[in-house]
Image (tube, rainbow over all chains, first blue to last red; front, side):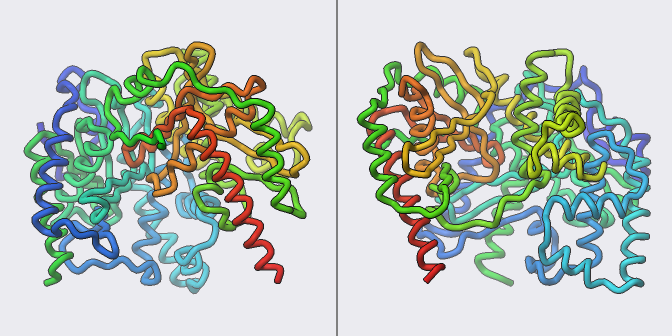
Amino acid sequence: MTSLLDESPVSVMDVLRGERATRPLANATAAAGLRALLEDGLFELLGSDLLETPLTLRASSLRPGPFVNDPSLATLAQVRGILINEALRLMSVGLDVSDVYGEALLAWRADVGSNEMTNYVDQLDDDERARLATDVTAHGVTLKRSLGPLSNRWLPRTSFRAYQRLAGGNVVLRDVIDLMVGTTTSDVASVALLDVTTSPLGEGAERIMRYHALVQTLRTSIAPLRTSMFSTASGELWSIDVDDELLTRSVADVLEVVSRMVVPA
Amino acid sequence: MTTLTHRRLSRNVLNRLIDDAPTNPPCLTDDHRRSLSARFRAVASVEHRRLDAWMVERAGQPFDAFRWSPTTAKRVVGNAALRHSINDPTLTRFDAVDIELTDQLLRVTSGYARPGSLASYLAQSSPAVLGLVSAEAANWTTQLGEAAESIAAPWSVATSDAYYDVARARTTLRGRRDLIIPRGLSRILLRVRAGAPGKSAGPGLRADLTIDALAEPTGLAAARVIGLWPEAGVVLSVDGTMEDLRRGARDLVRTAVASQRRTLLRAA
């Protein structure tokens, strides 16, 4: 079952968890085949020699357009994304976040200390800071309204990092899942992944959702139940149930990105 | 030959590693302890030295001064929360995290917390920061709980890390351990680690193995130390053999030497 909603749903969590009775058995057999597909494809692209620097793929690598990975190019949009993610983390533990900007900023600083991004925020002038605060508050309100109640029994984990080394270390898949619920120890598939973005959902969103599912499958050897993406810009939620076809398409996505990295356009 | 093994995380991997563990781990004797102490004493140090697996993995490289943050607090709060949820199965992991945070804050109000402790840090933190500590601790306790639930054998959450003061060498060794699985007279240790294992993850596990054996009054080594990196989906293990214990001890002494060398170079 695939849900593609144009309007903000009653609750993101309702869609994420779905009907308990309709969950399929946990797929514990797909991971080995996917890894073999990836390894074979990467061998064709990279050969057997070790690269000087491993190719690192992130979810953002699957977006259309050139690769940009320079922390010195911090923008208000990036900071907005970070702060909305912090707000999601606070909401996930049941905190009533009344001042989204202030509380998210406080939590972020407590966590990372001082880095290029926090320095960037420190250097903003009053107008820019006010714009950021307004922007974050607006996105935070959409998130708060749409997220819905999050039961502790669903084992929510936030900002969950994942790494996978492939091709003898030549390729590293990195990923961060904004919110993950469910467990891999159950007999039925119950893990649901949510990516919260402050951009509108567009080209590339589906590939990112597939990528989250692929990395999670490789990491735990159990395929998740579904992968979803929620935009705080538009209130849209895209949610896809994970199946073998989706995972195989994600392998093709990854190989395509690696081929672009090896031979830049 | 080292007994380091590398496995991908899958449903029964922990059970297989527990079932296959050697049954008769060796004992460290007083001679071993004296020999280690002499080697540490040979590495002069003005300050008290604290060594652990992390320093071994970094070959004694200096790192930023420790500061409490939601990330550094997650293991202490998360492990304690898992202990609470075992004692009271009606608690969810989040409830257990809340109880542990409340316990920590009570220590401050009752005057039992010393400055610089986790409890003091939590007491000075805003609700937003406490929320993030809860989120990090919930992540940790969920990962550790999932690993523990997949283990068929009886297990318990370690009440503390292993500490060993090397006699007359101004050196304290700290071995981390999260879960303890009893095995005959000995035990199997499980450590959960964040991130992905580096090339020196094996020496790190061996350091934990050695420190745990030294901290054990009888000197009996753990049958196996298992390192679980849930974020990378990787499981490494080292067996409690005399060879691995020796290597672990050598790595700790080398780390002390490297660390001392760096201190002298900085001073020069």
